[in-house]
Image 1: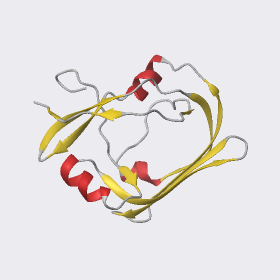
Image 2: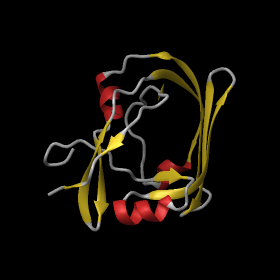
Image 3: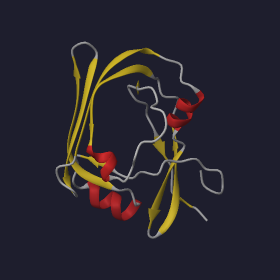
Image 4: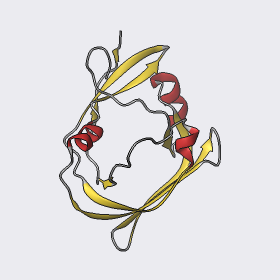
Length: 152
Protein backbone atom coordinates (compact mmCIF):
# COMPACT_ATOMS: atom_id res chain seq x y z
CA UNK A 1 0.00 0.00 0.00
CA UNK A 2 1.34 3.46 -0.79
CA UNK A 3 0.93 6.65 1.29
CA UNK A 4 -2.39 7.39 -0.45
CA UNK A 5 -3.82 4.00 0.59
CA UNK A 6 -3.62 2.43 -2.88
CA UNK A 7 -2.98 -1.31 -2.73
CA UNK A 8 -0.79 -2.87 -5.36
CA UNK A 9 1.72 -5.53 -6.29
CA UNK A 10 5.43 -4.87 -6.76
CA UNK A 11 6.87 -7.41 -9.18
CA UNK A 12 10.45 -8.60 -8.67
CA UNK A 13 10.37 -10.61 -11.90
CA UNK A 14 7.86 -11.56 -14.59
CA UNK A 15 8.31 -14.06 -17.40
CA UNK A 16 6.99 -13.79 -20.97
CA UNK A 17 7.51 -15.76 -24.17
CA UNK A 18 7.12 -12.59 -26.24
CA UNK A 19 10.58 -11.11 -26.71
CA UNK A 20 9.17 -7.77 -27.97
CA UNK A 21 7.32 -7.27 -24.65
CA UNK A 22 10.54 -7.36 -22.59
CA UNK A 23 12.18 -4.03 -23.61
CA UNK A 24 8.84 -2.21 -23.86
CA UNK A 25 7.70 -3.33 -20.40
CA UNK A 26 11.12 -2.59 -18.87
CA UNK A 27 11.60 0.85 -20.44
CA UNK A 28 8.08 2.26 -20.57
CA UNK A 29 6.44 0.63 -17.57
CA UNK A 30 9.34 -0.24 -15.27
CA UNK A 31 8.12 -3.84 -15.00
CA UNK A 32 10.99 -6.39 -14.77
CA UNK A 33 9.89 -8.72 -17.57
CA UNK A 34 12.28 -11.44 -18.68
CA UNK A 35 12.22 -13.52 -21.84
CA UNK A 36 11.47 -17.20 -21.21
CA UNK A 37 10.30 -20.39 -22.84
CA UNK A 38 7.02 -21.16 -21.06
CA UNK A 39 4.47 -23.92 -21.08
CA UNK A 40 1.20 -24.54 -19.26
CA UNK A 41 -0.54 -27.85 -19.82
CA UNK A 42 -3.53 -29.64 -18.37
CA UNK A 43 -2.81 -33.31 -17.73
CA UNK A 44 -4.91 -36.37 -16.83
CA UNK A 45 -6.30 -36.53 -13.31
CA UNK A 46 -7.05 -32.79 -13.13
CA UNK A 47 -3.34 -32.02 -12.97
CA UNK A 48 -1.66 -28.90 -14.32
CA UNK A 49 2.00 -28.41 -15.20
CA UNK A 50 3.61 -24.95 -15.36
CA UNK A 51 7.15 -24.69 -16.72
CA UNK A 52 9.40 -21.71 -17.41
CA UNK A 53 13.03 -21.60 -18.52
CA UNK A 54 14.55 -18.14 -18.71
CA UNK A 55 16.27 -17.11 -21.93
CA UNK A 56 17.31 -13.54 -20.99
CA UNK A 57 18.59 -12.18 -18.67
CA UNK A 58 20.13 -14.89 -16.45
CA UNK A 59 19.48 -17.65 -18.99
CA UNK A 60 18.79 -21.11 -17.64
CA UNK A 61 16.87 -20.25 -14.47
CA UNK A 62 13.84 -22.50 -14.28
CA UNK A 63 10.52 -22.81 -12.57
CA UNK A 64 8.47 -26.00 -12.63
CA UNK A 65 5.23 -26.55 -10.76
CA UNK A 66 2.92 -29.54 -10.96
CA UNK A 67 -0.41 -29.43 -9.10
CA UNK A 68 -3.59 -31.47 -8.72
CA UNK A 69 -6.71 -29.29 -8.65
CA UNK A 70 -9.58 -30.03 -6.30
CA UNK A 71 -12.95 -28.48 -5.64
CA UNK A 72 -13.86 -24.82 -5.12
CA UNK A 73 -12.97 -23.17 -1.79
CA UNK A 74 -14.00 -20.06 0.07
CA UNK A 75 -10.90 -17.90 0.47
CA UNK A 76 -9.72 -16.80 3.89
CA UNK A 77 -9.47 -13.05 4.47
CA UNK A 78 -5.73 -13.24 3.73
CA UNK A 79 -6.25 -15.29 0.54
CA UNK A 80 -8.87 -12.85 -0.68
CA UNK A 81 -6.51 -9.92 -0.02
CA UNK A 82 -3.58 -11.68 -1.75
CA UNK A 83 -5.61 -12.38 -4.90
CA UNK A 84 -7.44 -9.03 -5.09
CA UNK A 85 -4.56 -7.07 -6.75
CA UNK A 86 -5.99 -3.58 -6.88
CA UNK A 87 -3.07 -2.31 -8.92
CA UNK A 88 0.62 -2.36 -9.69
CA UNK A 89 3.38 -0.17 -8.30
CA UNK A 90 6.19 0.37 -10.82
CA UNK A 91 9.13 2.67 -11.55
CA UNK A 92 8.44 4.54 -14.78
CA UNK A 93 10.96 7.16 -15.96
CA UNK A 94 12.58 7.17 -12.52
CA UNK A 95 9.32 7.87 -10.65
CA UNK A 96 7.03 5.47 -8.79
CA UNK A 97 3.60 5.14 -10.35
CA UNK A 98 0.50 3.17 -9.47
CA UNK A 99 -1.40 1.45 -12.28
CA UNK A 100 -5.00 0.60 -11.27
CA UNK A 101 -6.38 -2.85 -12.00
CA UNK A 102 -9.99 -3.98 -11.75
CA UNK A 103 -11.51 -7.45 -11.94
CA UNK A 104 -14.04 -9.62 -10.17
CA UNK A 105 -13.11 -12.06 -7.41
CA UNK A 106 -10.87 -14.93 -8.45
CA UNK A 107 -12.68 -18.29 -8.41
CA UNK A 108 -10.37 -20.35 -6.20
CA UNK A 109 -9.95 -24.14 -5.95
CA UNK A 110 -7.97 -26.44 -3.69
CA UNK A 111 -4.60 -27.41 -5.09
CA UNK A 112 -2.09 -30.04 -4.04
CA UNK A 113 1.52 -29.29 -4.97
CA UNK A 114 3.00 -32.43 -6.54
CA UNK A 115 6.33 -30.94 -7.65
CA UNK A 116 7.99 -27.55 -7.19
CA UNK A 117 11.31 -26.33 -8.51
CA UNK A 118 11.75 -22.59 -8.18
CA UNK A 119 15.13 -21.12 -9.14
CA UNK A 120 13.35 -17.82 -9.81
CA UNK A 121 12.57 -17.03 -6.15
CA UNK A 122 16.22 -16.96 -5.12
CA UNK A 123 17.20 -15.12 -8.31
CA UNK A 124 14.68 -12.38 -7.47
CA UNK A 125 16.14 -12.06 -3.97
CA UNK A 126 13.06 -13.56 -2.30
CA UNK A 127 13.37 -15.93 0.61
CA UNK A 128 10.12 -17.52 1.83
CA UNK A 129 9.37 -16.84 5.50
CA UNK A 130 6.64 -17.83 7.92
CA UNK A 131 4.18 -20.65 7.63
CA UNK A 132 3.43 -22.06 4.20
CA UNK A 133 0.06 -20.92 2.83
CA UNK A 134 -2.30 -23.45 1.31
CA UNK A 135 -1.97 -23.93 -2.43
CA UNK A 136 -4.83 -22.59 -4.56
CA UNK A 137 -5.68 -22.70 -8.27
CA UNK A 138 -7.80 -20.36 -10.36
CA UNK A 139 -8.90 -20.64 -13.97
CA UNK A 140 -8.38 -16.85 -14.08
CA UNK A 141 -10.35 -13.66 -14.48
CA UNK A 142 -10.48 -10.84 -17.02
CA UNK A 143 -8.65 -7.76 -15.77
CA UNK A 144 -8.65 -4.14 -16.93
CA UNK A 145 -5.77 -1.76 -16.32
CA UNK A 146 -6.12 2.00 -16.05
CA UNK A 147 -3.68 4.81 -16.68
CA UNK A 148 -0.62 5.20 -14.41
CA UNK A 149 -0.90 7.68 -11.53
CA UNK A 150 2.18 9.36 -10.02
CA UNK A 151 2.85 8.31 -6.41
CA UNK A 152 4.08 11.25 -4.33
